[in-house]
Length: 211
Image 1 (tube, rainbow, N blue to C red):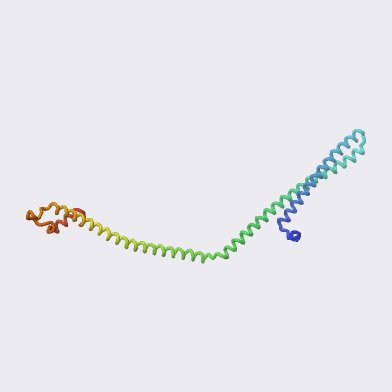
Image 2: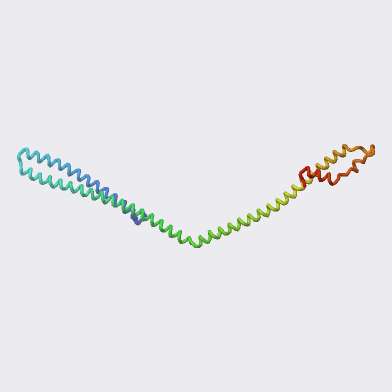
């Protein structure tokens, strides 16, 4: 029941008109077929009367044939007009759909434009760029500081490793010398009293590449 009181849209009206035009076109086609059938019958009657020599009957039938052919010609004109109306209706329907689409698009654009403030958007982008630059600078400063801290620590550890290596190698060499030194029984100083001169230490450091 609700569909009976539903307001018809323009699209519904156009569909109904197209349906009526198609029905009219079919009716005109049927009428033309009937006229063509009558035309053939009249032509046969005229020939028949002509054979019998009935000129008056031929004259009357000929007038009917002329009127019938005129009516058939009118059906072609009406059919062409109906076809033209159907085409115009389809074009109108297409135009109205395009207009509806444009209207919807315009409303959407209008709503978006109301929500968007060009100045505010530009300010937001500028603020983002500014804060992004600050963040990059802060990150760079933190990285530089961390690099300095860890690099200094690494340098200190590396230096200590080199010193330990040098001392170990010197100690190994000293132990070797002590092992080869004459014993105290032969009147030479004992291993515990053996001392390395400063010149010897410097020579060992230079040999290891440590200034």
